[in-house]
Amino acid sequence: MIDIVGILMANIIYVIAITLGGALISWSVHFVPVGGAPAAMAQATGIGTGTVQLAAGAGLTGLVTAGAMMQVTDNMGLILASGAVGAMIMMSVTMIVGAWVYTYGVGCPPASAKVKYDPITKDRQDLYVSQGTEGHGLPTVSFVSGVIGGALGGIGGALIYYSLMSIENGLPLVDLVGMASVFAVGIFFVNAVIPSYNIGGTIEGFHDPKFKRFPKAVLASLIATFFCSIIAVLSIGGL
Amino acid sequence: MSAGGSGAAAEAVPQNKIIAFGVAGGLIGIYAAYFLVDMVGQYMSFIGALGAICGMIWGAAAVRRVASYGLGTGVPSIGMLALGMGVIATTFGLAVGGIAGPIIALISAAIIGLLIGSLANKVLNMGIPIMEISMTEIATAGTITIIGLTIAMTGTFDFPIVLKQVISTGYIAVIFIAGGLAILHPFNANLGPDEKQDRTLIVALEKGALAMVVAGIVATINEGASGSLTILIGLALWYIGFSGYYERVKRDAYVVLGTGQLPTKEELE
Image (cartoon, rainbow over all chains, first blue to last red; front, side, top):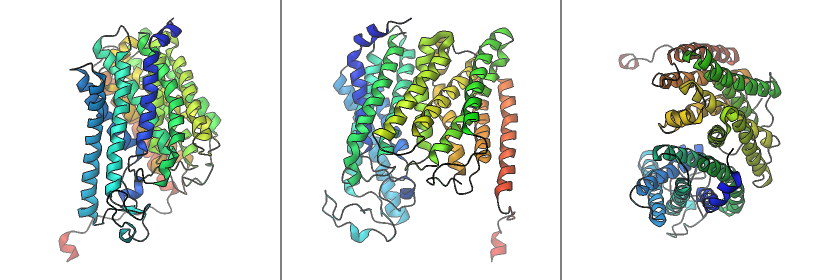
């Protein structure tokens, strides 16, 4: 039988880091402009897919870039930055191509229905919102918000992956990478779904009134991730 | 009557029977495959996939029940959540449990599911009365799915072998998506005012059979398991599932008409 208390006490710093990473991911989802199915029909502002798919896309890109950086350095700051940049690039590319499709393909101007003036560019929004829709496309404020969300999600994913890889264990590297990836992906999905229930599936970005609900999702994610991180540390540390 | 947001779903088969079917079928499949592969031969590894299909049908039934209340977000999210919780619990259970690994995995999945279900209702105020029990069911069903497909691929749930042949090689991602699809897709494809339990669940059988075929293909390169029988039985089950689904679609539709071929360019002019 494994020494539960000993392993936990030896790796308590990583338990805390994983829990923080989960909370960061949960917070990051509130920044990402997710429109869901209505946005896919250009009837709501945001990217036309679900929270989980977007958060997973951005977070997993962050994991891959962080993993690539881990091969050349042990510097935690560089690894987190690499994860953040990877996820930001992924989010930006998704949003800019989405914006082209909405503007040149569907033929609707980017407009937010939640605010009268774009908080960043001060452009009038409500005149451009088509009747019967809740906005469409990706206005500047949603784009900026999405990039911030990508950065936070990437840092969270990289922090989880880095902590899992740093736990002391007797595994060969190739197996450790597999274990750490599986746990990171599992924790990532749990923390992408919890905020998506909190915002009811759609949000425009940090200017959306729903954004104020984030403390509840962060609290829920802290509790859930803490439990998951104990399980993850015990299984990797026990081998 | 369950139109994604209208309240409790009508059930021809009560959920308690499906829970019993999922847990018992899943565990019997997992342990029977584990012991029979040793005693009879590698080709018995297909029983693990049958256990996984029991778990998938249970998971799809639980998703159907909870998603009928309207989650506010797409049904796929809950399937990904199921496999996310399941993969954490499975890796933990198999890593520390030895022969009791699957049971430890199921118990830890149930705890994670109950925790997230309570958080959804108490902290996020989702207000779905069956959230706690459904999350517990979905996490456990996801775990059975993952362990069952793992055994179909490797013929065992001994952790060193699973780690080498499923996790490090990345086939865990195939299990993740194929198993998640079998749990989330049935209700997602059938939801609406005329949704019926048996029509939804037979899609779970059909998707499970596809996952079984994929597991069989992976098993052909692993020495501990044999793939040909898994692939053959998977294809047979897929045929049963698909034709059964088509029967039920015809039964529930007002009328099924053939449209004929699309008109050619000359005919349109």
